[in-house]
Image (cartoon, helix red, strand yellow):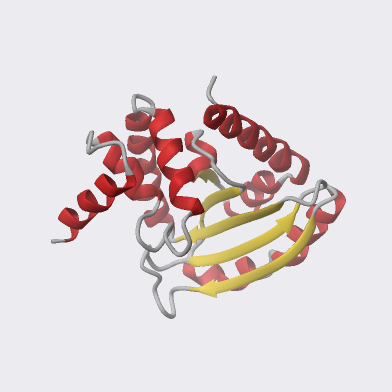
Length: 197
């Protein structure tokens, strides 16, 4: 097992432990009827402590969604986690590039003092269903992809200042590897540039 794979496995185990300890998925399921872990924690492609969660939240329930923070904070405290920062966005007012929805960006520390980030997205129910379908298709494709190459590119991109998420992001890396576009960040950048033309 490579160091990259070992790190990804360890981070996923940490994420699973954290989600179980806080009961966040149960909280969102109870409040909104469905919830989906997505992103690198779901794809088993973690290179840093980051969790993405989607749930269906009708636009008229924005105040219910905004009111989640005290319960999230209470659950974190009970699990021995320290909430550091929380940002709420109503992207129905000013849509995010990813789409219109509701968002909580949570930053916290685990018991060992490690920093974590959680992106909690509430999408309109039809939008949520479409995203779940696309997510399932991506997971199926990634199951046959070169996991080590993806982890390598994500790790290399993360250590470059002002690079990851600005020059390239996770989705770029996933699509690049699935397209057999190459094995370096330079090749990735060139590939991404052709997609923007």
